[in-house]
Image 1 (cartoon, rainbow, N blue to C red):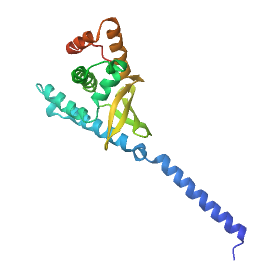
Image 2 (image 1 turned 90 degrees about the vertical axis):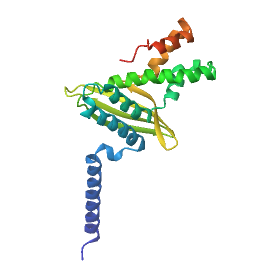
Image 3 (image 1 turned 180 degrees about the horizontal axis):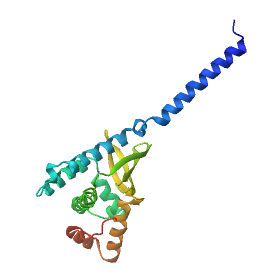
Image 4 (image 1 turned 120 degrees about the vertical axis):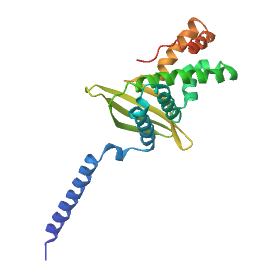
Length: 212
């Protein structure tokens, strides 16, 4: 009969082996396996945009407008432009009449869509990885990294809020620079130095500097 101490050592050794295997399995699991719903939804949107960009038919001359329309349709399903517009105006949003707010949202939407599409249309075989997700109640952030064929990396973070069963983006940080904060600073500067009416005038002309 095996001594009790020997049996204890055998059980302990087996336990350590199982624990080591479990830890190693976590290390070697793809990062996507540990991702949650916010990452899944961001990845779905990004993949759909990349599919459009890789579409050979849409790369043909004369197809630029159609390609852009497809991208905008995809992006509009993931971005809450009304929330972004509100955050970009900050305290000035509350000073606007319902009619002014209604007018401002589509003007801001056009501005952001142009900024976003102009950036993603430059993608050429970039590698996109998902490096982290943080969820706090109905808010979440999803960190991604875009690497070019030359090895140049650009971190992009999507900040989202849950609306119903969807996670909607209300801000995007490119290399740590918030798109919403960037526009907020510009908008506040224009309103302080001139007026809200001047801001609307520039938005209609799209005479607003896009984030770099």
